[in-house]
Length: 365
Image (cartoon, rainbow, N blue to C red; front, side):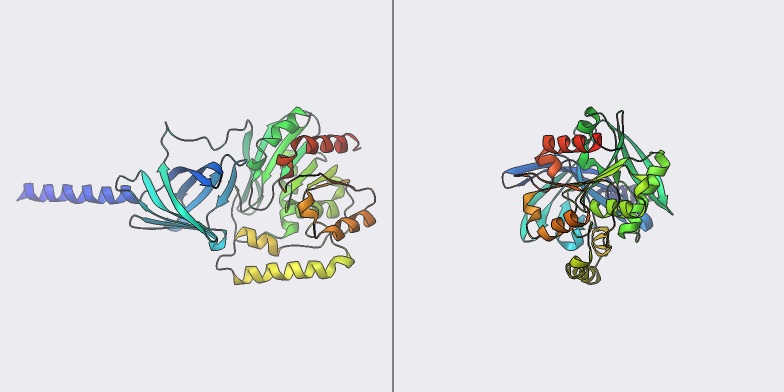
């Protein structure tokens, strides 16, 4: 009787262990994602969150190591569901019996196709971060730490600020080029993205600008040049308006639009854009950092720091009024439109952007 009891207990423990193994999704999962003629290695990093929940981040390591934070990671038995970008992106799959793979359907907007994820091992794992830099975490607010990259270098300090949805690793190829050009280069992943903290609040433009100032203070940087892409224009304009003496100059990489500059002539346009962002945030099921940043626009019209803005032609279409307003109100600003440039202008026109930055920084006091 005792023998039967022990065997039964062993089987129960074995079955329980199998169940736990099948449900243990912590670690890195990877796949080669193909969309039309393009393909990219994608890594999904899943870890335990607070209260027994799961959290996840996806990295597209062939696209400048861009990362996307999952809005939710739900696991029920062997079924897993990932949601990001407020429901626009989803992945639903089933974990294999051995727990080493997941087969499911990837959905982005109206497009859906099968995707198989494979659990990464020490032998098969792709490297998320291949750029040569150090990483540190700097506290900028209560319970908020930012991921800060340092590519090293000599000369004037440059701080790279990424666009909406990206983190500092998007500059992993561009940062070393600036180092080679003679600068000491840093990158900051704003709150809500990359490996930085994801607080529930603190996404207004001035608060994000204060985060950058806190990093500058912690690193003891004396009047660095801020180089920002896209939405980072608001952080730079926040600092350039309130604390111009703390920076040597501002470089807007397809970033000097309504969220970065607005005078009275553009108020109606600003209000329309801002009200739509507020409505989107109110209607959202999950108030993601992305939506909160878009709803956190502020008006900046008194930027005193030296100003270089480099534009992509497609982005300028419909925004000509903003460029004319900047020219009229900030005559010292240098505005450059690069033919055939894309929104990720520092990737599509790397050499031209490097030359413009070098010429701008050289003439700074």
